[in-house]
Length: 84
Image 1 (cartoon, rainbow, N blue to C red):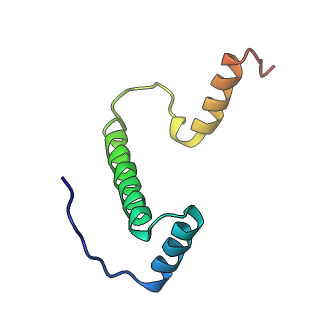
Image 2 (cartoon, rainbow, N blue to C red):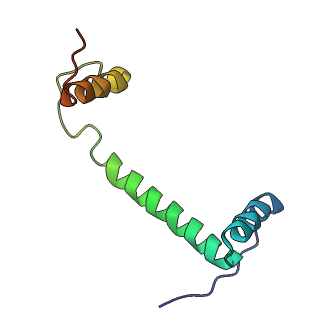
């Protein structure tokens, strides 16, 4: 089932949307629908991910501050590289 929706959007949103539609050779309505759907899906994914924050104990007190470093170390280990 589909629904018709009429929106008023400012020029600073309309112009890039129109350009994107022209670049793709698609109607602006199609591109707007895709952008809206993508935004909703990203938001839903973020909400689901937040449910897990704080759900597990890691025994790593600085995990929040150094998570990129820890992920890099884990990737190196998976790829057989050593930090030594």
